[in-house]
Image (cartoon, rainbow, N blue to C red; front, side, top):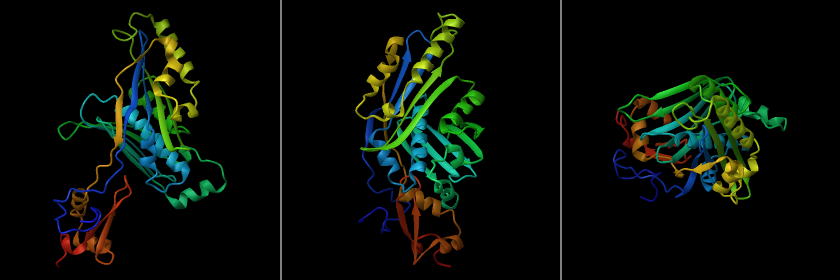
Amino acid sequence: MSSPTDPSATPDFLNHDRPPVPDIVVARGVQPFHLRDKPVRGRLVRLGALAEALLARHDYPPVVTALAGQALALTAGLAAALKFRGSFSLQAKGDGAVPMLLADCTDGGALRGYARPNPDKLAPLLGDGAEPSAAALLGQGYLAFTCDQGPDMDRYQGIVAIEGASLTEMTGTYFRTSEQLATHVHLACAKTESGWRAAALILERVAGAGGIGAELDAEAQDDAWRTALALAATLTDAELLDDALPGEKLLHRLFGLEGLALDRARALSYGCRCSRAKLAGVLGGFSAEDLDHMAEDGTITMTCEFCNLGFRFDRAELPGAER
C-alpha cells in the first residue's frame, strides 16, 4: 500500500496503519518543581519544536493557532499531575468564532489538540486589525476539564462557564470555583524564528497543615505564597518561549532564592492516535443512506481533526454497499 490514507486490499478493521507522524519527543517538556519548606509547587511546560509539529498541520489564522497552542501547553501541565494511567483533556465549547477547542494529554505525555473555527464568525473579528481575545473567539459557553482513568473507572469532570478575557483567566475561574485551589497560570504561544512555540508556568498553593510548609504558621505560609506570586509575575512571554533559555535556568532565575527544588522532568510527544481501523469503526456506525451521501466519486474521505490527515475509503467496501 502506497499510503495508509488510501484504500487498500486489507480490510479496514484489520488495518491499523497510519501515515508517518513527526517523531518528536521533548525529553524535558514538563519540569515539576517545588519550593522547599513552603506551600508552593509548580510545573514549567515548554513544548519546543513539538508546538510547531502540532500547530502547523492546521491552516488556522494566527490568533486561533495561538489559542490552540496555549490550550496544549495548559493541558500538558495539568496532565503531569495525573497519578494514574489515563488522560487529561481540556474542552471549550461556545457560540463564538471558535466554537470548539480541544486538547488532551496522556499520563505518558502524548499530546494532541485542535480548534474548529467558524470562518463566517471569525472574519468580522479579524477585519479591524485588532487581535480578538479568547473570550471574543470562544463566545458564551463552557470550559470542561476531564480526567479519564480508563474504561473501568468513572471519569472526573469539572465544568465552568467561560468567564474572563483570556484562557488564563478562564482557567483561574475553574480552579477557584471547582477545585477551591489557589493557582497562578501564565500561558504563552507565538510564532518565533524557529516556528510556533507554546509554554506555560503553573503554580499551586498546597495545604500547609500536615504537609509542605506545615512548620510555618498561617501568616508565614501566606507570605510565602505572595512572594512566589510576585516572582512569577516578573516572567515574560519572551522568556517562556525562548529556546535558548533552559527551563532549569529560567526557574532558578525566578525562584532560586526561595529554596527551589526540581523534581523529575516528564517527556512530551506527538500524540495523535488515529488509524484506518478507528475511522472505519466510526463509518460503521452510519446508515447506508448516510454513507451514500458522504461518498464522492465512490470514495469517502474522513479527516482526522487532530493531525489534519485525510483517510480515503472505497464506498463499495463499506457496510451497506449492496442494497
